Every structure is written in C-alpha cells, then in structure tokens.
Image (tube, rainbow, N blue to C red; front, side):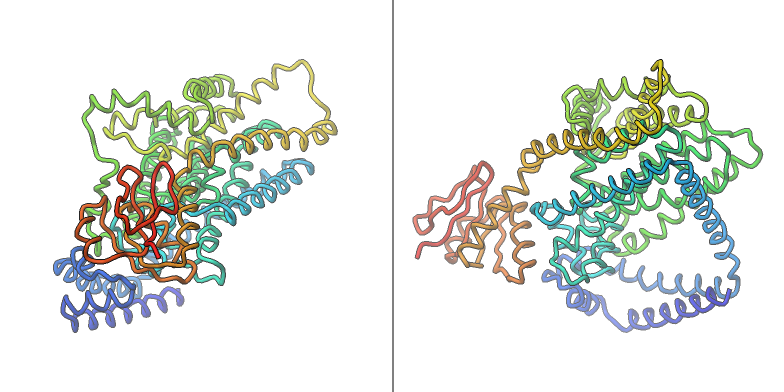
Length: 566
C-alpha cells in the first residue's frame, strides 16, 4: 500500500509539473519543442497532427492524471484488488506450466531445450545476415529511433505497431548495430513463443504429436520469417498462445483465474496491432457459446474479463488517442471497408493465398480445413475442448471478412498457425491410437532426435527457397544500398519511396547523413532535376532517366540507380 501511495504521489507531482509546463507554452512553441526533442525536420507535419485542439486536450489530460493519482493515493485498494487478481492469475499460469513440465519424460525435456536453442540460433543467424525490410526501416526512422514517447503516441500510419515500436525503442539503447538491436526483442519473443507452444500442445497431446506439431508450426514460413524480422507479428503470436491457453483452461474448468489471464494476454496483441481484435473476439465468443456459462458466476467473470481487456487496451492507447487522434487508429487506409459483393468475390482467393503462405503449398486451404475437421472429430476426453477451440477459431476467422467487410493482409491471420498446430497434433494423436502397437519409451527417445531433425531440414529447405522470392523487396533494396555505398556519394534524389526508406535507414545506421530530396513517383522530376544536379538518382524501373549527365550503376525489375558522371 505504501508503494502505491508513493507512486501515486510521484504521478501527481509529474502531472502538476507537466500541466504548468504546457500552460506556459503557446501551441507554436510546443510544436518547436517536440520537433527539437524528437529530431523531426518537418514541424508543419507535426502541427497537422498536434492541432491546437489536441494541445488543449493534452493539458486537460494532465488534470485527469492528477485526479487519478489523487484517487489512488486516497483509495489504494482500487488498484490493489485488480493487482491481486492479476498476480493470482500469473501464479496459476506458472503452476500450469510447471505441471506440464513435470509430466514430461526426461528425453522430452531435453528435446524441448535442444529444439528451442537450435531454432533460436537459426533465427539469430538470419537476424544477423538478412537485410532490413521496408517496414523495419519505417518503424525505426519514424518511431523507435525518436524515443519511447514518440513510439507510444505518434500514430501517423498503421506501420507503428505501438507496443513493438516501444520495445524496439528501448532495445535500441543497446551498444549494438541498429538492425540487430531491433531484432533482439523479436528473437526473445520467438523463443518464448516456441517454448509456450510446445507446453500448450503437450498439455492436451502426447509427447510425439506435441513435438511434431510444434516443429512444423515454428518452422513454417510465417513463424520463421517473423521470428527474426522486427515487425511485431511474433509479439502477436506470443499473445495469442497465452490467450488461447487461457481460453481452453476457462472452457474446461470454468477457472476465473484463466479469464483474468485472458484479459492480461489479449492486450499484448491489441496494443501491438488493432487487428488482434479478431482472435480476441473469437476467444471470448468461444467461451460465451461453448464455455461453462451455467456455472455460477462464470458469466459475470467473463464480463469483467472483457471490461478489463477493454480498459487496459484503452489505457495503453490513450497517448496515441490524445496526440494523434482516434481517426489515426480507427481508419486504416490499407484495409478500408469494401462492399459485401467485393468481399464475397475476393474471399476464396484471399484465403487460398493465406493458407498457401502458411503451409507452403497451393493446396493449403483444403489441407487446413481437412486437418481442422479431422482434429475436431478425432479429439477425445479433455483434448476435446482443444479440438473445438481450434475449429471455432479457424472457421470463425473465415467468417470475419464477411462480417467486417474487409479483405486484410494475409499476415493478419498469422495466429492461425497456432490453431492449426493444435488441430494437426490432435490428428497425429488420433492416428497414433489407431496403431496396433506402441513404441517402447526407449525407442521413442532414440527416434525423436533424427525424426525432428529431418522435419526441420525439410522445412528450412522450403523456407530458403521461398525467402528471397517472397521478400524480393528487401533483397533488392540491399543490392541497391550496396551500389549507392560503393559510390561514396550522399546527395540523393528519390522517386521510389519504399526503396528510399531502406536507403535512408541503412545510411543512418552506418552514421552517414544523406542530403535527401524526395519526389514521390516523380511528380516534380523536371523542376527538381533542372534546379540542381543531384549525385544519386533512385527511380522506378518503369520510369528510367534519360538525362545524359547521369550513368546507370544498378538496375533490377523494380528500380534503377544513376550517378552523376565525373
């Protein structure tokens, strides 16, 4: 209680200080301070988001923070009771993990540790050697490099996966190169996700089904790529594993602590990407339709869990809502609502593409549906709830575009890798029951390692074949950057915004400052090139340069790079 009062007093003093500071500044002065503190060179753009109305709202928010601090100082139980429930839920989750670990044979534990270390080493190798992706460049340039407050509050585009940007901003303080610092939190998240997935599957499956399903999931293209690429999707996967486990625990036993755990896990995903609303809604919907709703107090606990989820998410998004406005978060220009007819026409192609991306085969959609149905029908006993939950999440996800009337990016459905892993494990377990004999424990231990190594080798081989083809933008950008670096010139004219972001990121990561002139899609090409002879020109391949003052030094199907002749 003393700690809560001390923290409340500190928050109150901070609110008073900030309120006095904000009152003493005019709007133009505030914009100037923000520009200097964050390093933004375009104050007009900051002013367009931090309007006078939002500046006034920020002042009022400091009074709200002061009132909240005073309330908690006088009534600390308002926060102590929720904290006690959260602590109890964390203890219950830790106990569940320990129970699964203790029921595993010694060889299983060793396999889990060896696989986790091996996959982490593999992801670390790619993290150190694979080129930066455009979204990684934008995350760093626009948000993470400018400090935690910018990452938390500046939502100029959906590229700002806020919780991920915040973590990257903090890890950016480490004494390593920029791209490595950005990818370290992802490597940690991927390790945690792999271990938790294995334990989750082992909770409902036997040793071999859990092990094989885990390996196939973590070595699928989405989880391998986003296991080192710093774009926030692995944080979404980690959050979903926690929410999925909590959902099944609540559905099986009606455990209110599991509902609290669900309310703690889901905001991690929502505060990373608003699209996590899809799996969160499916988890809560599953509990409402198929959970023990007749158990006394369950519906009330379910409602409280949903309210806690909404409250935590809203609290985290408050800085962005205040400083960037609700429209910045609620209006995604890349996933705009379309007509129901357009959704119906694009639905099948979208999910065929999604499941091909997940499975690595053009027949992935049909295979996934068969696996989910077989897992549901083949589940027995306590694992029955796992089969139901997996089927509910997969088939519910298929209906979401029809309800929401959007066709999102395929990567929005990355959480389906976890539900499909559970369904696949249930299928393998059902097949195991059909065998007329069972391998002795010694043979299971002896065969585990070579079997898993063979599966991993096949998956990694498939990943290597697809990686450069699928991520052609980042590899093309890396070759372009090498060509520009070889010239030693830094005065760049750019018409290709995406590649320009990569070039700027790589240059700044090396401590090189560019003189950067942007003419998006070449709208001002003639006037800008006539005004001065830039040293480097970066343009789309479809719009080459014919100016004889320049020679081409790099070209691919996307872009051309020219340098000024000597």
